[in-house]
Image (cartoon, rainbow, N blue to C red; front, side, top):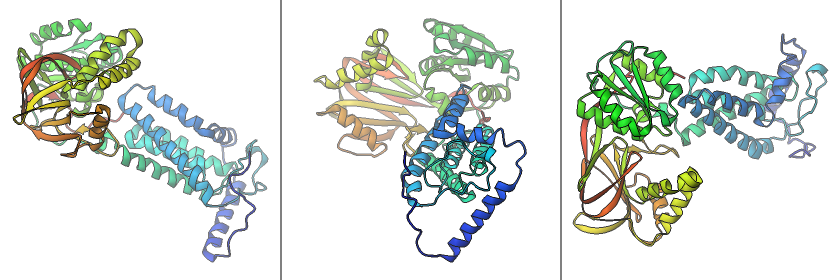
Length: 500
């Protein structure tokens, strides 16, 4: 390897302030080299080497994510994203912008020095930038995990001065750039704490200090065993019923007959069934996320068993809207989204192939087959005119986009359906991508968006597929989508979530 810049190039002319700062930097470096750092000799050189190429931080991210809590997984991902941006910035701009040679190693005891000395320029410190970026990124998502990672990051940064490969100012500049990278990532992909659900009037729900009177039905196919076990520990008097997917509805109906509050653990489809049962029986609903996406629970502010158990013990709850659809002899409710057109077709095709070739390959194959089909999956009368449509999406509540993050709902009781329509025409893939890129724009050549309380589609062809909260059914004739304002009482901690 060779240096990434020519270190033999002479520095430009004298600058009094710069020269004084450089002289101070050198004195600080020599001062650090002369000091005895108790306990540092067996630790810091090894720690410095372990951070080469980000190996230490990838291992730390794996350890954080292994805790299996949603916030920890997001913290690990945000830390790695911040590290990647910091490394890209340092290696493409930072190292090539300031031609500063490495410190002379004469004052540094031989036992501290690295066996393999770096050959790139000294300013700024890439190790310090990566450490600060990872720790800051983790802390922005989970302050508790950030407190765990911060001492390690600080030690890595200090190890660069201890081993003699950087001046103190290199480390400070690198740490500042790393922190800035983490905040830049947050600007592009906001944390969940930045989108706090608005305060809603507190709903009447029974406080169940040990969970007595709460009956929780858990879908065993969702891999919920660990979460159910943790909920049992938090609410020892709660009754938990684990069952197969085909038995979920029956078990929920039985539970509703003896429960003070109805609980559910599973994916969005399971939660949808529980909501419908809770509505009919007039029971408050406790939702423990147990699926892959868990849109409703996360938008509600319930991420794990600790948040849910705290709300149940204190009787903290809010009212949320429920969406309702009807068409022909079919009707149902939805908590997240309802759609007609391409998406239900994709779901049906994916389900046909997933058992044979797996989920991801089946999804790709379904997209190719549906988007290449020479027909529009939906024809409906909208505004007095029959139109071909590629997609009609209705969200239960307004979806807001922040940065590059997918849309999220800030308010689950705003009384609105967030309706997005992708017009029919040629090249459906391009139209769908254009609609996704347009986001909340009201009008575009590819799509239209509007927020309403009720929507009616006339003359929908028999056999048209409708997807709701991950489930698929058929509708026909006049299809109505409407809101049931604040119809469902749901447990939710009202004073924020505990850190994980």
